[in-house]
Image (cartoon, rainbow, N blue to C red; front, side, top):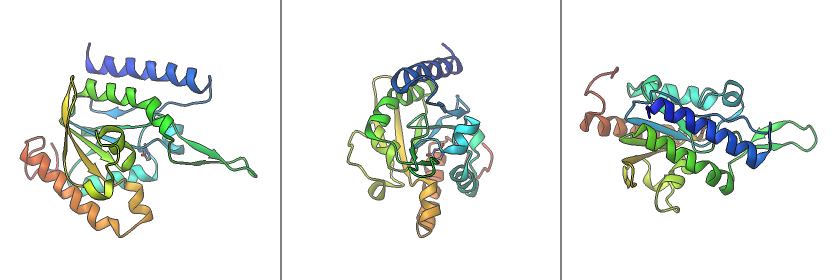
Length: 210
Ligand code: URA
């Protein structure tokens, strides 16, 4: 089956599963997007409000941040495949006002969505999976205690029966909004990512367009 057909099937299966699990009409799934032939996949935590409204990953504030950072190392999101670990927005409801805000996904939510992320990886077959923050890192690394603070910017090989790839852990772009001091480290990690991709000829050396 063609990769794009596989991705459509994964989206349909995920939608039916979430509907059954959480109740019809309660969940708006947001699946991955981008170049299904890309050798680079980026995986975030979970969609937020804007992502859910537009049903596209990384289109809110964190997405704009991500785009800016990618630009600094000459990467363009249209050439990547971008997705999330959890395929819907985890929310908490404000008791008094009834308004919704984001919350971190629970273990159960991650475990519910993980088979669909794994299927996306098996369909796209990337050489590098760039994880953004702890959630995708811990979901995909063998050692569930791995934390971003110790492994950011260092590649971790992963071998599955269907695919092999390297995880390349980065901080989540939203963490830079909240902790400006991470900005410099983030830029260094992105420079390492760029070098890693160039050395393996996944992108061309010196190019801003690949
Ligand atoms: N938007 C996403 O799609 N994923 C995140 O992890 C954060 C914001």
